Image 1 (cartoon, rainbow, N blue to C red):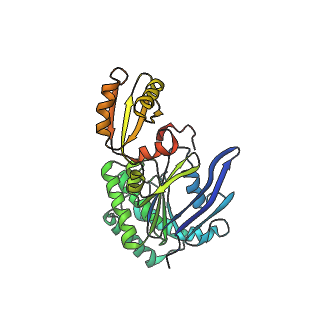
Image 2: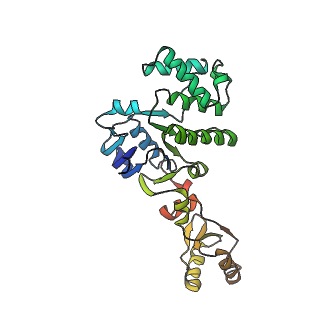
Image 3: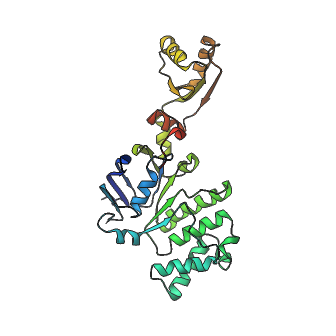
Length: 313
């Protein structure tokens, strides 16, 4: 018998007045999985994150974390989750130890148990030698690791991270993800991450792509990319409509207009490029070939580029 889902979301919908932020979103997160919610601003990922954190009431649908129902048992959900928000929540005037100590008190942790837990977590995140320093002296990457340690003080089964790499340099981002994988593998923590970064999404075990409140794709990053089924050819042209028609008439190609460019999916795209340049030398300003990316998956599913979403969440 398979393990029950660590996180279950069923037909979840939410509206801000007349604006629909989530529409019938359903998915499951497996135990001990790093699961990503990828989407631009306005996609609904932040609303979904807040609902799972019990920060907003569920309007329609259902969600549960470690079998605790978000709508009927929010207090139980809070005991089972750790949260790291995008906005900093550390007090720069306090030491690392003091920040964790005061947070531990909120969960009823006291005395030697709390002291041992703080030392254990700071050892795990590589900051035990900095516990006496004020937070203001730490780098952005170090602060992020303290935030995660804070979210893990009460030994949650699930860790929810909102845009965890915000403000981090590439090296700190790499270190952060190494630690998240260590949490998954060694402490069996299930991790849900919201992100708008393609590089970060690639690091997840599985990924749900959101667009304008709807779930448009869900799978491993590798399977999502392989669903494109070929190379991606991008053409810059002064007249997209005319070239789109000519490509259809002469090569039976269905090119999609994306902004001021045309996009074609084709096996062995390098062979087609030569024919296109020979056929339309005056209509093609530039042409490029690339292997499918998560950006290409988003374009295929939505018909527009990742950053062309107009709504702001």
